[in-house]
Amino acid sequence: MEQRKRFLELVKERALLRGDFTLASGAKSSYFFDLKMVTLSPEGAYLIGKLVFEILRESGVDAVGGLTLGSDPIVTAVAIVSHLEGKPIPAFIVRGELKEHGTQKAIEGSLPPKGSKVAIVEDVITKGGATLKAIEAVEAAGCRVVKVVALLDRHQGGSDELRKRGYDFTSLLHADAEGEVRTN
Image (tube, rainbow, N blue to C red; front, side):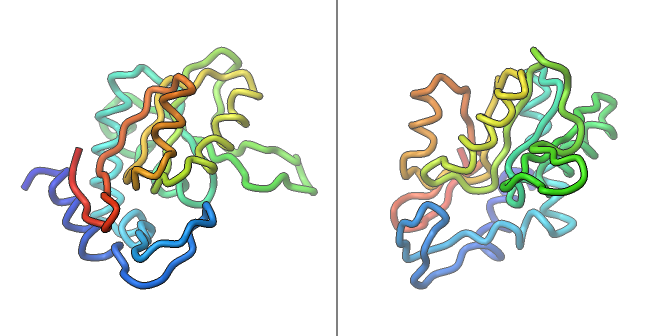
């Protein structure tokens, strides 16, 4: 079975919940995607690593990262797959809050030197707030964001905002207003 179709099946089987939810953006929704049920599973992590790596391989990025916690398993999966494919892409994680102890870093892991090309990944994009926070931190560190990849786009303004700001955005899956999920 094609990898993207299998990923879609996993999302529908394990991550799509129906009910009354408040999203990170503050919006109310009758459905919710708990993608950690897929990103933290062995098969899901493997598929995500392969699918996102194939997108990033073409963009020539020097590193991949995103805002903790949604991006953590994604960047790890991509880093592992990229190593196995012989084209290593180091990973980094942008903290949601600055550490008040130790190194007090805003970004953990392998952020490349200033001027480097990086990709930002996200599990679910709704309004784009988490993604923009990661982008701002990485750009403040002197890197150029050349690709933004979401596993799932809810089509509620986030992807449009990223494109409006000039970012090259893509997603593996998208959901409509009723929570029906499809591949892109």
